[in-house]
Image 1 (cartoon, rainbow, N blue to C red):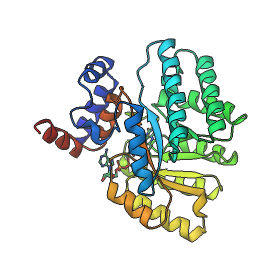
Image 2 (tube, rainbow, N blue to C red; image 1 turned 90 degrees about the vertical axis):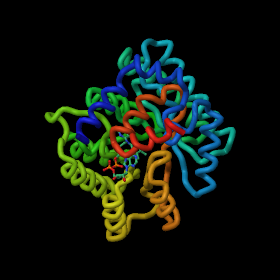
Image 3 (cartoon, rainbow, N blue to C red; image 1 turned 30 degrees about the horizontal axis):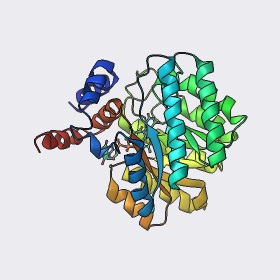
Length: 304
Ligand code: FDA
């Protein structure tokens, strides 16, 4: 049943027709628990609140379904506006972005140009930029582009998904280049040929990757709400004497806030992923897919 629901929401999240329909109705249906608003001003407000609680943030302008080069340019422009808003408000936040929203599927050269413009601007404002990882078909193109960008820029990082078989090799190679990685379990529906189908295998792979990357001496963002994995990471960090400046925990906006607070109280660096923007639908569907309980939260809210 859980597998069916996950598959249902992931498929729904990919539907651009349903997505544009949902956009018309604004941030209803309970999505505002996971999305910080449609406008940049609400997102900055949310970040400021998090900062007051001792949490850092990474802002993501949601925009996954782009149909042409104009929309890619619009997304790039939104990234620049987000950077400017972070700098202007003095917020403690990074930028997260998706390469498909910058045109990776349309023209990889154009996508690279947008990335270089964004990274040049971010460098001037001293803001770090993280490339989110999308579904498997984009993994190799994203890594190729990341490696090219790393030749010119320091303040850029990428995400590796523990559910992919290839990730151990990727983390090994990226560790040799001191890559700043966000490690996650993985949020998309992938084929059994490329990804572990069983949750226990994904969890084991995740723990291996966290240990490998920490041990390589590279900066590691451990992005999960899984208490068992967080505890394992904390134990390992203590045993190995990994300095607190070499890692951070990351969680999603509106999810497991008590755990976020607990980590802050214990003196760990905590960063919250704060999505905002009109195109919240695909993101929202992935959060529902992860946690069927959220569906009941949404249904309850519909009647309020
Ligand atoms: P898991 O799904 O096993 O959940 C562990 C526990 O966390 C659950 O039992 C529940 O208590 C809580 N929980 C998890 N999800 C919840 C939800 N939606 N609502 C309420 N509670 C929830 N993926 C990707 O493919 N590419 C990417 O770039 C990113 N980026 C990213 C950034 C950050 C900061 C985070 C935290 C996550 C991502 N992800 C991602 C998503 C990631 O791949 C994964 O799908 C989710 O983090 C859920 O997995 P957990 O590690 O939390 O464990």
